Length: 331
Image (cartoon, rainbow, N blue to C red):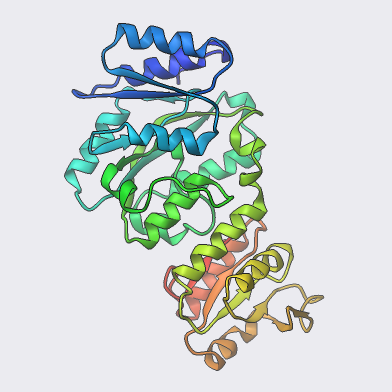
């Protein structure tokens, strides 16, 4: 795997794109008010390679930079990448081949690898393992309410789909996760090239570690917002599996979005018999009875404990519930 030092991130990232085995390529570099020598480096690239265009602007943040770059894109496909990541030499060619071969696809990502290895924390490694298991459309949308199922810097998208859903928007939560959820509700199809085509740099200054939009509470707000407008729209209400911290926090946002909470389910005997938001907490054995009492109710599994999702999935499968239709994992 290629690696580089912090001092030459822009040079290496740009070089990894310009070395792509793709016949036609336009590289739009958005300089969002940099204060170091980035502007000079980008100017050097633009003067030496006609494929490079630099968009220099005052600092407005990631959303403004993304939409500024998008506004200058003319090609039917738009690929994303950050200045401190590296692309495999075949990345864009492989993604374009997939989009050309499957006109129904709106977004094509890839498997990703975090680096440098010594800086990849356990939480990030667990996330990458989960992310890289989701390759097909069905797998991606089945688990889209757990976390962001695509690495934003790894995707190549049809520009018309981006424009159809209104580009990048600011709702106070992560802009990439928001985009995937809006595309999902609009009927877009997703896939990944099942190969590592992006090397995703891990470091303490990553936006996901510093920006308040990436806090757990903001993810919960996003999930509740789009669940209410998609799978739970016009439904009979929700049975929430998980009466702990995660279930309690999510239920608050669901209620704010107008989603009725019908009951809670939990395995903790200390919680069973108590109430959350005025609704009883039941043991898992009561779930069949609860579903019979509330025809059309959906189940949300909001338990973050490691291994809990697999156990819940097995239990709900045995009840004849289909994931992505009758129930969704949301943690």
